[in-house]
Length: 443
Figure 1 (cartoon, rainbow, N blue to C red):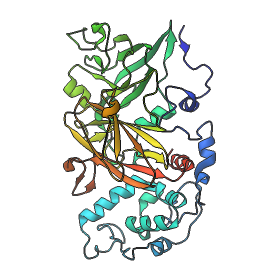
Figure 2 (figure 1 turned 180 degrees about the vertical axis):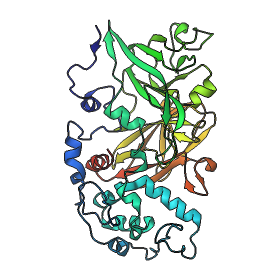
Figure 3 (figure 1 turned 60 degrees about the vertical axis):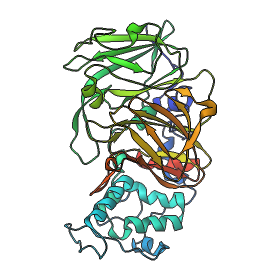
Figure 4 (figure 1 turned 135 degrees about the horizontal axis):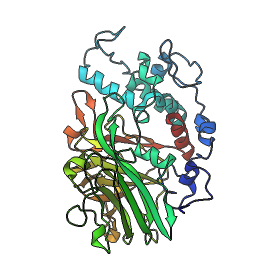
């Protein structure tokens, strides 16, 4: 019979913390066991959370949140003295935009409001009154806009990062082999919380598929059951196989997997690093529609040190320009606390090159295609990632803030209606407890 790999672990959330395969996940260090995250909530902030912004009549900022002081207080706290806020046109009670504001300004701000949602009031307790006051002015706190009562856009759609943390793909052990079971499915994928879902493909009902994690030297068996109405085949991109018949290229190394059939790929994970798994059959269509995922092989000996991890899979076919299957503002941010080092695993599953640009921080690029660069490691703030490439970059943070992080092919990130597509942020908070607070607000 199949034996669970972690029989002593009582819940998927606890596995995120104790499993050696995921201890460096994005939620590493967060108090997530049981109801801990909900119980700790925003009380983990260094400053009290007395929300400075209030919503309009009939709305509440957060469940259970107390009524706060008038929104004018937030504006008064701003230090730049230029807090005049454009009012969207065409809405109830709206006035004409003040001189200097355009429809682009209105729409661009609305997208950022959607991105932060009801997380915005929590920033007071994290960053303090002065910083919060400036943010209040930028977002137009006096408008009492409806997004303040809504979850952030990225919390309203399924997310690879959160799925991996809360419900990691866990193998069973069969005669010393780690066995992973996945389905290949037709799914509906919301690119963001407002757009109609697109007809996509996914593994285990999600795009990207769940991250598969193993240790270097593990014997691995990945069993894929095809629930599509077409054939497929799965390639583990970057793996050095002993048996080329496990390489997953239909009509070269195997017969395609027919609908309702299963196929098992079995190999030893010899080379460590950031790899991928994806369709290699009608791949322009199937990978473009979401048959892709991360395959992480942890090295036998640690190659570099980091505190948190962010998997970043880009695609540029179905749904436009996406990071982990979503476009801004529905892209989950990378989170880190001052003093920590974040590992970003860039993976390009699209058909275009994307130069990823980090605002405010340099990246120390330490591995390419899973291979450590050693003395050839280099610093940059813009890293070009070609189709099929994987780059590992370390970012050591010391200055709190909300820092933009995006592709620098500008038509992939911003248009007349503001930012979209391949944009996210690096949110740096002063203390690790603040990461818990953010997670409590969005989960």
